[in-house]
Image (cartoon, rainbow, N blue to C red; front, side):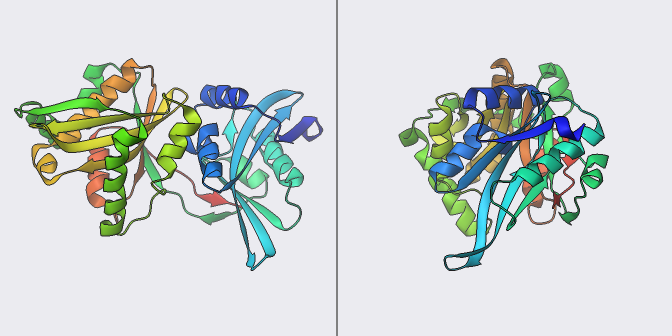
Length: 312
């Protein structure tokens, strides 16, 4: 079985990759445009397609880092965040053979390591002789194929109460923000200020326009709440295939008082659903260092999943 499996590096086009990734329901980090955005910011990216008897069975997009002293490279670490992506659901032994094929054929030589952060904890991990080196994080997933009534019913009582209250606020309106850089630069400035004041580190703000440039006008969607004509809250979502991932959020003091963020997310869910988005990933849920944000995401009523961690 293993002899029929081959890993091809640099042998895919954007169209093929995105078609297969969409078919498999890949996460944002395995989307072609995510890698393209990182490349445009000076990062290094490698993409592998694993085929069995000529048919694709797995994708893995790796972000690459070199570690060493000065110009001397001690080791290259290539990480597949939220990968590999299985095109179908091959047997566990086939998955293990596919991962082993990637490791054997890695283009950086013996002084390189492939690290996988998969979606599932499954027998193929041990069959491929991988060991866990880091624990995983949790994320909340919302199935937008549900009817609006079902989505609303799934919300926790307090979250829904905040939404109802926001819907009744005079002068609070949700609209789509423009996606030309000059139209959303204000939100990136707010995000940079939040990262500095709250002491967290997310993707650099330059990633957002880079992702938009890679993916075109459909790459992202921004919803904004205005209170009496002034910005009160906003949420920016990155689109990938028939899924979307929450990327940046902001709320003013008045926005927090009126529940503007609840209204923004609800209107965004309905709009994304109408646009054909089937799954919304709200991103990391960290109840330790980000309890407030975690409560907000959990209150929407999605399915919380904990990723198994990182494996070498």
